[in-house]
Image (cartoon, rainbow over all chains, first blue to last red):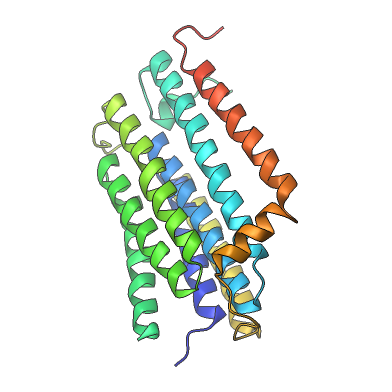
Amino acid sequence: MNIDLNHYLAVSGALFCLGLLGVIMRRNLIVIYMCLELMLNAANLALVALSHFNGILDGQIVVFFIITVAAAEVAVGLALIVALYRKRQTAHVEDLTAMKL
Amino acid sequence: MQDTLFYLFAALTLVCGALVILNRNPINSAMFLVLSIASMAGLFVLLHAFFLAAVQVLVYAGAVMVLFLFVIMLLDLKEEQRRKINLFGIVTGGVSVLAIGAIFWGSISGAVFPSGTARPDGDTALLGHLLFTSYALPFEILSVLLLVAMVGVILLSKRDLK
C-alpha cells in the first residue's frame, strides 16, 4: 500500500486532537503550553504534507514562519508564567481564579 | 521501506504525544515532547522537506525544549497531585475532541487528494530564493516580531512589574 496525503493528514489530525485533549484535561500551566506546541506541530505536519503532494513550496515557507513565531511565543509565554509564579507561587490553573465571578 | 519508515515515525510521534499528556511529571512530559518532535522531523524527511527537518530539530527540540526544561527546573515543579476530577470539564473536553476528530475523519476519508509531486521539492536553494523574493516582506516583519518578543521578555522578567 502506498503512503499518500490521507495518511499524513490522519496523523496530523490525531496529533491535533491529542494536543487539544491535553489543553483541556491537564491542570499544569507548563504542560498546557507543551500541548499547545503539539497542536502547532500537527498543523506544521499537515502544511508540509500538502506542500509535498501538491508540488509547491509555499507551504514549507509558511511552516518556517510558524516555527519562528512559535519560538517567540514560547519565550513570551514562559516569561509570563515565571512572572505569574513569582506573584502567586503556583502554576496550577485551578489556583488562578482571580477573574472568576 | 518508505512505508515502514512512515508507520514507524507516525507511531512514535503519536505514542510520544499521548505520553506527554499522560505523564504526571512535567519533566517526563517535556522529554516525550522532544521525542515526538524529533520523530516528526523524520516525517518531514520522508516528505522531502530536509531544511524544515533540520530547523525542527534545531529550533524545537533544541532551543524551545531547553527553554521549557529550564523553566520547569527554575520553578521546581513537583508531580501533579491528584485533585478532585472535574467531571464537567472532562465530559465537555472529551465531547469537543471527539467532534473535532469526527470532522477531521469525515473530511479526510471522503476526499480525493492529488498524489505524486509535480516537481522535486525540498530543494533548499529554491526555498531560500522564494523566501527572499516573494516572501521578503513577511520575513522582515518576522524579524521585527522576534525583536519585539525579546524586548517584551526582558521587560516581563524585571523584578517589579509596573
